[in-house]
Image (cartoon, rainbow, N blue to C red; front, side):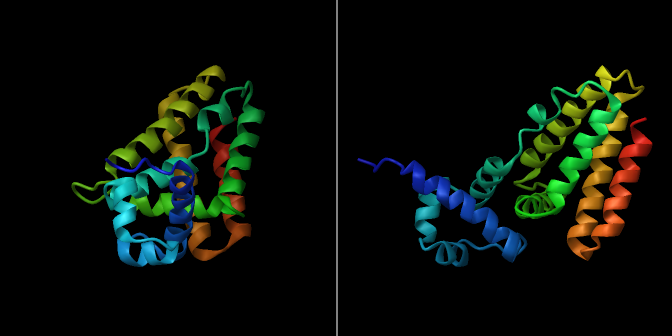
Length: 184
């Protein structure tokens, strides 16, 4: 009879996986070095998560902010601009950078043909665009889906720029400009 999963151990592993990938990258991720760093075995990781890809997707899911709740109560353009600026700032600083670094790596990996991360990446982008589209509709903005796409894609690029270059002054100005010029 199979041993029941230790859900507390599983949750701890997921948090540690996100930190590991943020520090070591996704491109060369191998279960043995990951397991050794986490103080477990690759066999135990497979027991808990079935595949390396499923491990990563589940780890990212635990880190995903509740985008819908974040923008649900936005009632005017000024509030939406501030909420987006706050979201950007949080994504580029402190603990937010760990999960954002990993998410950006997964989005890049999802571009490969037959990527095991494509479904997760598509869902993450679709959720953010749908949430912003709904907020923009409440503000009576034209072509809401295109505006939401511009914001999501543009801010993602600016966040990636900052994480790579470390130039916070320039990227903060760019994020603010994109937000202010897009939502009037």
